Image (cartoon, rainbow, N blue to C red):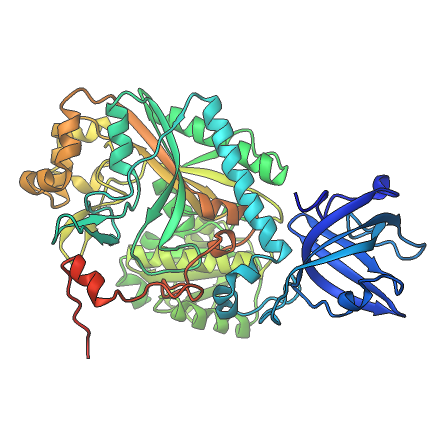
Length: 578
């Protein structure tokens, strides 16, 4: 080894010993002819000292930030008043007797300093420098610890880690596929997996009753802070189970990961909420339960008013806010709502048993009384949104989160887990005038709906479940369909008649004919979990080499064009748009 110790492990107990360290020059200071250098590796920093009588003094004087060096010397206590209590190695320094410059560095285009963060473009282009920052080293380390904790827990529950293929048949799963041309089979393409969904189900048919993997998933979709073209799932599947069995395993795994990565204890049991209740109270299936502000459906009451906006809307919903506000603050919220998909925002101030606002002239005293009773408001402001059911919920959900943050209602350091269960099986696609699966088409509908699937698809609920933490969906799962006839019926409802289903999913349906066990599973967004545990919304902070918002890597220049000779080998031709 080129070193005997790392830059983060030496302390007072090592005083008097000799050591050899390797690392990067983090900073250099010349104090009255004595050169002090903070030497850095991923374990920490150690102060090294070059005295004027050192034969390497001149070389040390020429060292610059990010030069890579090897040094040897004696570990000594720091002088009184020079101790740095903010560093684990702050009580000692190393007096250097040997210096070996392993590599010189150009002047770095960004600071390797957590206090000075470069812009996104620089961070992405010089990611290898950004990753040297201690905060990034710690984030990647946390990701590693979380991965090992997941494996540790699942291994203890008799799961087997099994890899599924990356070159697969294209099967629609909600997003566009990334495709790979086949050289050996010209004109044919593999797809990269959006998830291991079909293959993990086939593993259940194969008799591997408990499977998991940290699976790479690839989806060609528009990007945002918590979405990347390639990401990782903690993917698991179990045979001969009911819904609660899956929830228990996932809950145990998450609690184990939380404790290993943060040292915190999770709630003994996670809360459980029906999908319909979540939408009714919070307007979203990803509710943040760290604060109150529950919504109230006042459609029936509002339609008895003379306010035409309320009378003519599909839904009227109210968000009672206990805090009073100035008219200026309210006007800003109205503009914010319009910028975030709403047509407008009506409001009324609660005063005893009456409401005060320009719209209350359209409300009889009876309507006002019922609105106050329904919302249980005693003071503050009532905010109303009237629109389609979907848009009303979406707008008020965003407004609720904004008020929770702006009014500082969110409990600090709280972890509010909640299972959202009993989702609707199908949702109506107005553009294409067809039914789509709410999650995916391999989900088992509740038994009581099996006979009426085709007649009343809008009423069907399924054994679907999402896990939400502090308003962020960590993952989702379901009990799967294992009966081929039922699977074919579901595929037919969502636009895959028997012939089309056989073409796309024939290998899965065929496997079910040879004794498929009842099974169910779950997938945790691993990158997202790591980010949420650190209170961060951008999952790129936990990926070593992420893509930017255009799905590009400024560091290596991907995606890039292929040379004509390479295209010819693949029997491909690219037409460039003028």
